[in-house]
Length: 328
View 1 (tube, rainbow, N blue to C red):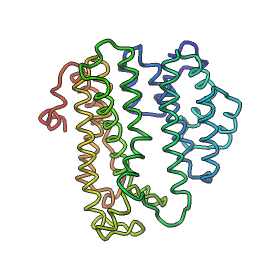
View 2: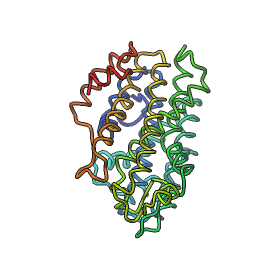
View 3: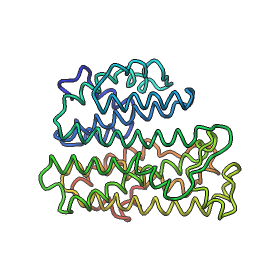
View 4: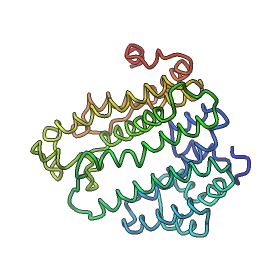
């Protein structure tokens, strides 16, 4: 996978994602290729957007180049990205070096796959670009203005992925779900938003150190909190509100998994959902602004999640509260 690409993408996937690579391996053959490529393109744009060593205007320029390459299949500007963006992560460096074969792969896919991937990639790049423009000032901490801005951000960088996943799977897999596709897309969108919101809550201290606050400014002001001097106590009312929102969104993920039929898809979706639930629980027990280190599930939890995913492929029991407690 893919047969026509000039590189074996499996090691590259494994090097840039510990958990998503496991999910990819579980997917049915028909959908594995477009989903794997979409992930690599999204991870590449994320690498470009996150390299704080490069000025924001440079990263915006490279994101625009990458977006043009995805939209039109032109690889002539990709070498400039690989030379203009550096990463301490070996897998990310290799990914940036292999953008051209990724675009060649995209160009060789069937029309449906290519269109779906281009659409989701453009939305992700739009969200990343808006993020860079919003926080480009540097220095003082800037917060998102309101809940609508946070909901839009989680949609653009993750919720649209749930819609893409649903579209591709429903296209290729007969009787993917008895739930109508429009309703399934809503659950998929909220599933993706929930996973992104978990990341936002977990990474709050690191983002604040870089001048970014994803908790809405109007809600912080109403709670008497200052984004520039946020503490665990001052942030708690707003943080708790969005923690509850993440729980609601992840419950949409549970409903999504329960609604789909193919065993491999259920297993592949269960992994990120289960790890998201576990991470959200850790965040509640160890609030990020109080924890000395970044909250992260252990390798043991990941291994247990893999085992549970095989049960979830055929049973809803791992989705129940009882089973989640047993696997804690």
